[in-house]
Length: 270
Image 1 (cartoon, helix red, strand yellow):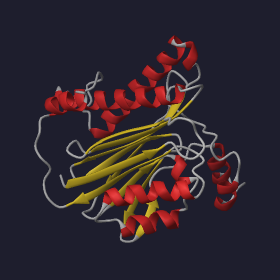
Image 2: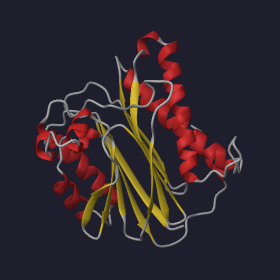
Image 3: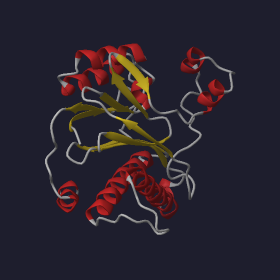
């Protein structure tokens, strides 16, 4: 497993009163996850917080227990564990929404990247995106679950029309809205020098892909600077939504060998 460098930044933006985005990352675990909540007053941030906490807790707990086999006797690889973690998170958000009247109808997008064995497993629900920057080329690794993206897929909209549409943020799939949810799962090989970007739509609505690529190129050796530049670019372009980014760079070398049980304690202490 290659060594990872990670940085993140989040901002409420110029219009919203509070931040409904949440995120978590740990380079030693190889895990990065981002959620953009939706719902009534502050319910969105409740949904995204539950999703992040539940997903990370499930992943670490399964690894700490070295639970290799699922209930049907099949081996659990990282993709299967991510799927299980998101399914459990979906149930938790759904149950919380029904238990609390103020949170009725809340939900959240989720995008997660888990780096392992020179690969990355990606899990995705909604329109928070994951990009890969490799050999000076930015590539979108996820597909937005939105009304507008479906129109693009069926040839009714061009990408330019989709970007300008007032319906571009209407999601067709979100975590916590229904008892079960369809989850996109992908696996990719990783290379030393790859840079991965997880981001909420507060970035992609405000900053085009060319500017994102240029910022990642300029900040490849300083991820903290890059995260700040991406957020600042979104704010200077209007900052109409909360904006959150996580940047992951794949480096040479070996990560520290810390037990998953210790990671579980450290991640949720304090």
